[in-house]
Length: 179
Image (tube, rainbow, N blue to C red; front, side):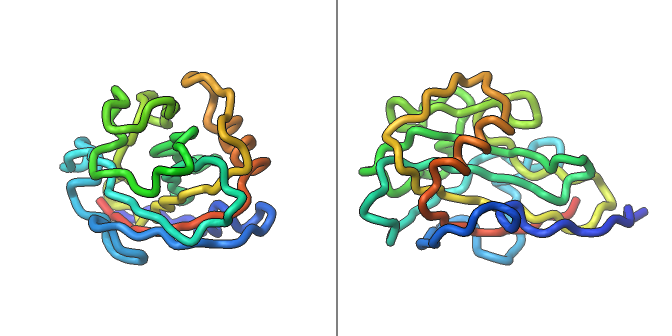
């Protein structure tokens, strides 16, 4: 049975407008179905974060953050699938699986936060069975600071608040998935 709900806009629609730059992936394509490798095990996937590469960000960029957010989750606050900050400005790509919970695929100093699954690192798509397609906004945020002083236990809303305060440009890929 398909759940009937109105679909919210994108997660950045109500935030201050910032310039965009380019993010690409060998694993996911904008507007296309998320491959099973990047889906949560509860929905039959392997829970691997996708490869991401970015370019064209502002010269003033001092670090990056990467997030994945599902605004279509049946909650009042969407669903955070990945939050990572303090990616050095010299890093312009993350390999497939870089979002492992132990942080082993990330550059030194990167902080990954607890997702809405309650675990750290990347947590793949797992919309409720029978629900409509969900959108997964993979974003690379160009920040105006070298470092955000946030502990891994920092709630996603506070991480998001800090990202909004320091984002000078953003690149987004949106994939979909239905279970």
